[in-house]
Length: 109
Image 1 (tube, rainbow, N blue to C red):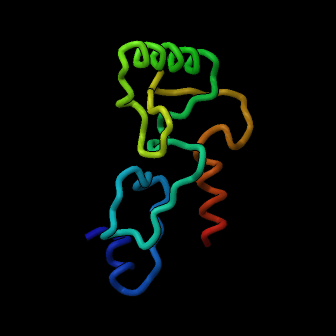
Image 2: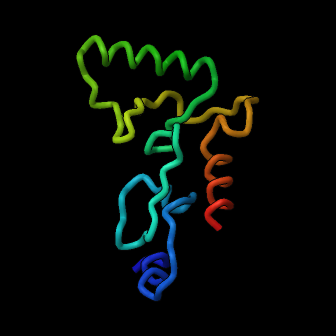
């Protein structure tokens, strides 16, 4: 049993939002609310802001489209394509998922 499951079973509201579980899989046993932040795909590890990674993603997307392969579009209608494993661009706070997730967590609290 997970900690969220324990709390949910004991009348607490549990929210699927955060680093530990990354809320990419539905889990009605653990979460009272499963939050999706608009504009971000289901897996926040595939969010890029750097020109090199954006170019890689665009090239992969064009290849998938040429093959008529739309299997990389997630349940929210957003392309889910990964590029390099890491990125550290000097961009605005909401360019990456962590800041948007933190703001949503504060709002939920």
